[in-house]
Image (cartoon, rainbow, N blue to C red):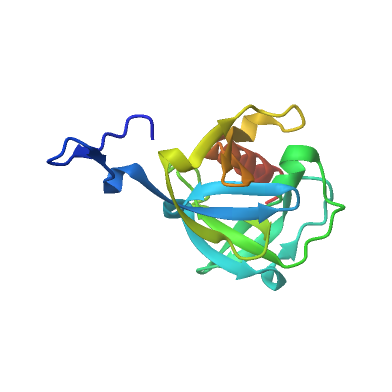
Length: 171
């Protein structure tokens, strides 16, 4: 959003354009939120469809059927902090489109707590925050404040590498 240019009206004041706007979703985790663009969102599934993995403590917690295929399910909290002990009140699976067209997986899911919240943002609504030491930054591009909430911006490239790596280990 740094490269966004607004248009100037007749009075010479900058007005907001569609380019100044980000349509996104806040995805609740056990300990915070992820901020993802709506274009990455594919679906939200009930957690009941999760087919659990037999291996505990890994980011990949199983698979879920979606549009005739099994998509890997990742617990982002395990990637960040290794935390699987905190319960979720309303667990769901958020299916995301894979950005990389070179990998076999075209979609994957993230375990979340409740329905994602759709939001419309502009550059004034986002305040960059410094990284915190307890997160593994290889799957996080940055941290922002949106009003009173802090959210992580995932590194989709690294996240998809993580999905591909765990998928290779657990077909």
